[in-house]
Length: 380
Image (cartoon, rainbow, N blue to C red; front, side):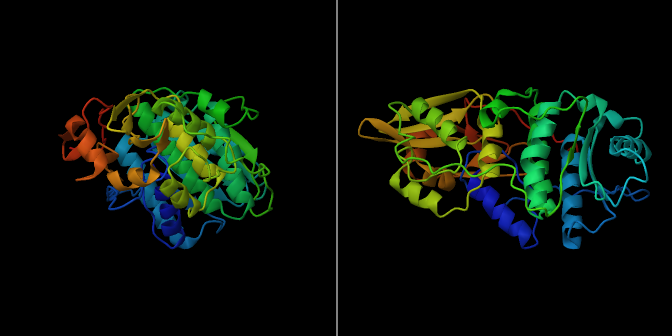
């Protein structure tokens, strides 16, 4: 998912609209026209995905979390719940989490191995992520600890627990989708983003995560030199530099890596470490191919169906990324078998690479890219 899509979705959510998004599809493409799958609760026993006994979450956010978590359940069969409690009643937060998994039948009765619980104890200011036994391979401890340390802690400390949870859920949803199609978790992406210093000793993680304490888990880095990320002699060289750029904060748009129009475009976006790490999680380590024609290049992925292509232009003897073209020529989708589709028509890139496109179930995609469909559990 593009950073512009993420930022736009964030603004919509803060304004009171939840947009359920696929993740990992480039950095800057715009979200337009997404629709989520409606979830039909059981008429005899409606499922409650969010329990907030503390008032920590804004009331208008609760139904939107319900919709999002219901979408994940219908799409994958993974029962993901959120609970905020004023205290644990004298129990350890780990024990309370295990008890709630059992009492609420998280993951379905007799199927607790298919559930995940995000439990926050307000009195101890502690967040516990409880992962069902059957999902430990999907959500290894390093990944769960990363979610807590690098996302929840930052946003909880700034007084935005709802925002922190949204980011966590997007990363969880992406990991679920990768697992559904058989892709294992690649711990190298965490090493690329930062040294792994937070490891838990069992399934899930438990950390002190204070709401509104103003703490900054990571200080801002020094400004990036404009020559630090040059365009490469090949599209692959440029893409490698792009991944390095993503892992360096703050993200400077004024680098040779991008076309001039793209630099202006990026400069107008509000950027944060969470967004760049979000994209790295979806792209790092994924196999890809590059095709070139008439001074244009398209880099598309063969190791994941969730990432839409990058576009590059040759300027003299180097290749620059054209972010504006990425925004214009692909569209993100949710609730279906594919999370992105090509939407270019009559432009230079579609003219150059149109012979490599095909239509699959109404989605225009790259013929020899990764076109594995996302099996929708709730579909026909």
